[in-house]
Length: 111
Image 1 (cartoon, rainbow, N blue to C red):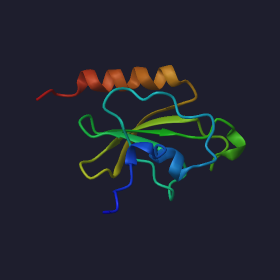
Image 2: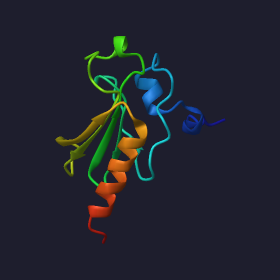
Image 3: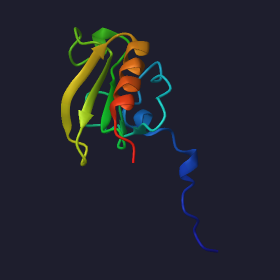
């Protein structure tokens, strides 16, 4: 009997594997954003390569954040290899961040 490959669909999301104590879960991401969280970062992140944008989601409890005074959500530009660029918005208001994504999307040239 041949060993079977692990069922990757049963694995928890990358953000949870990287940040097992992160609670509550990040909000549902806008379309096109992929989980790029990495355990060596301060918080989960999600990238939309088509738009060249990254969303950072920090802990809900400010005491758990690397910088307790920083807003929970931020949106930044990223280059083709995922390196950070300019910040677009940093806020505690998820809807404001989604509005910023939509504004950036409207400005993005379509193929």
